[in-house]
Image (cartoon, rainbow, N blue to C red; front, top):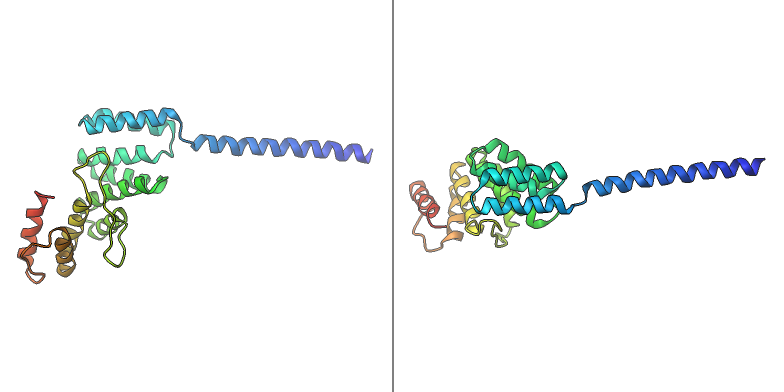
Length: 208
């Protein structure tokens, strides 16, 4: 009788373990990237690159409805809302994109976008931090070249300019000067002359 009881107990434990395993497997399946959200996000980026921001937004939203962990769709919404000048929404979606980013490339894209938004929101310290993240910046003034994959006109030079302008607005003119010289070391400017620094920033805005 005792052996029969233990046999039933083991059977119940096995069923329980299989049930738990199924739940864990289902949870993992829920956050795996499926072809549907990938297709929707690719369609969103195609629309974004063509300037169809409303269509891009709808596709990115649909992708998130398919998979709430899909970083590239959050990243897409960040860039869409930035171009629609909805800065608070853009900031929120870039933040979600950074949190859920599965790759360095996605993290850098979301960081780059959020650096521009933080500068526009007058959050200059945060703009510098985000630009550093996008540039993989270190304490030895080393940065990694950057190109936004969905707009090749946005490069590491834009991020250095974000840093330069942010430092200028924080009245850290020496750091501002250092960023400007990284962008163009032929500039005839002085770190002790804020007017020259401001003029260089405005000039570079139209050229980088």
